[in-house]
Length: 187
Image (cartoon, rainbow, N blue to C red):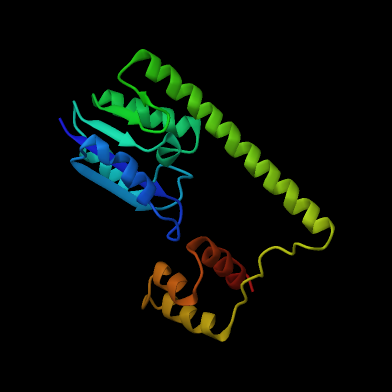
């Protein structure tokens, strides 16, 4: 039986030290730490942790929002862990899924967290809408197709570079590159 910790911050600029410090008291045997958005469960360290845990292990998180941002994802993760015989303990919420009360509280806390997130996004959209109406918000600057793009596109077409390499060399994300390619190929 092992004590496993999962620590996550959303961006490279954020510091996970607060979470690490809070979980030290649990005598952690194995740490899984990553700097990535929690928008879904397709995160490398989370997946590694899920593969690593065994029956009788306990997974510790600083708070449930580090594990999942949606109720659906959190409940699915809790269920997956329970099927493996793994307990989940949240430091901040002081909950342990090995108890009936803990299971109920996880469901309620996840619903509240999802509600808060939805409200935050709604307020953000309203703020952007007001800023746009008053001419203060223009949105992101569109990425232009340049001569460099054309050079990289030629290399990509000749299978000299991958799509990921193309995106990295051009300084855009994969989804942005996909949009650029779609528009470029329609010309």
